[in-house]
Image (tube, rainbow, N blue to C red; front, side):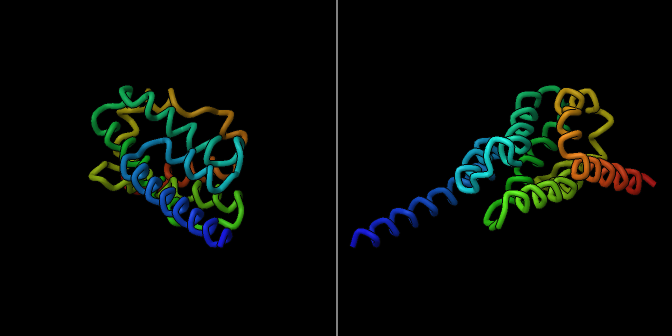
Length: 161
């Protein structure tokens, strides 16, 4: 009987956490990354805390540095990135990080929620982006970071021509 009670408690916890993740993602709430970290347990240097939460908070605290289209883009990209991670099962923390980094390109270019593409908001918001991104993170994840930067910029150039 005791094992059954533990099983029921575990099911209730997981369903509550899943509901919370959906609610947080729908709002673009940065707490999403902390809740998902409590499930995935990748640690302070894993993607969820060291990159996802860090940059979610940086975008949120610098929101007013963006113009109106840029603000909508930020809010939409946050929701998009979170939605990509919901209901996914990751066998390793590396697979989670790889998947998350891959989702950046799509969310930057097609954030949804009636937001414009990164290509359309970049030049009017360059000053805001310079307040957010840190060179050290590109150095820590050179392959993933540079690949994502060049892919987005290449697609922006392709869209303009």
